[in-house]
Length: 412
Image (cartoon, rainbow, N blue to C red):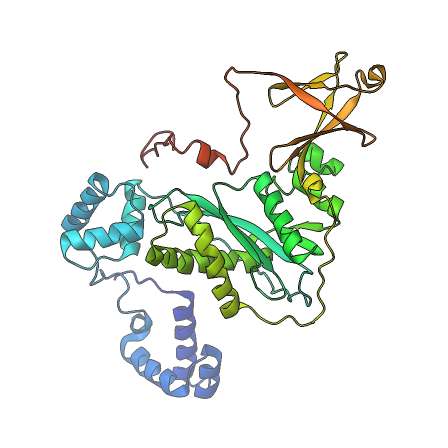
């Protein structure tokens, strides 16, 4: 007598068929309880009465699949995976092995073999989060989404760069965009200033939680400290909203997907090879893009406000320093001396504000806003250790290539 494995569903079928065969249950009731038609239940009853419960079990259970690999073929594939494709993903490895063996090999079988050989780590399937769609803002300038995308926009023909975009939430139009070497605070300040001068003050800007926009250190965040960019926006009266997820600012995220497909190919056809050429071409491209993908706002009212004066002073890097007894201070390894100060005694050991404008000029003020004239007294000429922004590291260290460890490396 041989053992037969059955599922719970098959056992329930046998139980119902036994009752139907004995006449203890009507055919219609049995079909309803099993979720099938009476015709199909009648077929199963004939099999049950002829073969017994064994006939209800799945016929292919326990048999080897027709597409199963032989032990010899499995060993050959495992050898190829270890020797030639040890760091390949399942899909790419399956393509290469198809070329080598000249036969169809599924990527799932390759994935199973890679897991067995220790070349691939099985990953748990993540539960998809539910992100309901948010309605567009009704007025132009009510909300502007901003973000940057680091990508090989020139496909190796030139340097790697980032694209910064400003997208109006009400219209999906891109009023401003520019290629930069890396996303920095100064670049965002400069582009925001350009946007305000051209369009006016938007009510709010929508960004991610990068340290350019949000104070991410726990102590500073809890105290409500603002970044340099956040301080500038607060001074001009623009609300800064930091999204909790990429899906929240999906309009700008999806836009980058479009540009990484369309803009990359357009610049390839145009023969663009430098950042300057890319920015020149981008202006023409955005005009066509806005015409094709822009939509009319729900309200004709424009939410932009008139720009404020002295934006050069507002969009500047702000630092605090303390004057010495000799009325000097240091900023970026340069010693500055106050020139012809009035009442020098009152300024000794006093706190001052140092504002570095986007063009590099320095503006020095007292806490009360009194302007101070300074001269560069001495400059440090030794090696300076510069603190880099997180998005500048890839550009500054481009010459230093990191070596990716193999999948079988003991430290992975």
